[in-house]
Image (tube, rainbow, N blue to C red; front, top):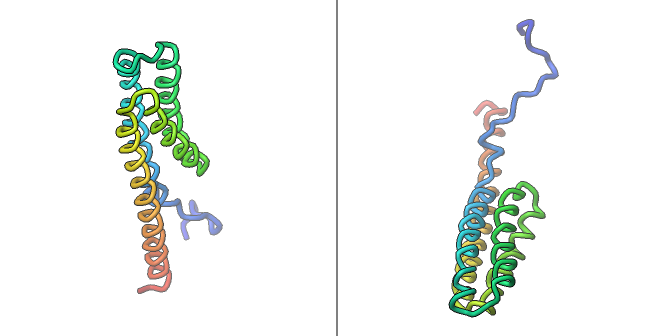
Length: 139
């Protein structure tokens, strides 16, 4: 052992193990959803005759929440809020009926990203555990 190493020192964690495919995919869906929801504001005002104050507060409020939640997906609670945002996006359909379709598509994308991301995380954890087991046993 060289003079710079300490016996209790733990090897640094591989940054690849820390990456979350679920977080990346869900954040991308929320970011794109924020753009779509923000663009629904002029539609609500001009085509659906929703008052500008209501359209701006609900549409832009939901868009800002999408961006903020995309930033807090490091915690599991962020995903629960993301699920609620999907309900809000679909509910905008009561003001602009086309949002039932757009919100539904984003809810489907969100569910797919969430489910597929969890599956990838689980399979990666199993693969890394197998890799570590083989490395420690000298195979």
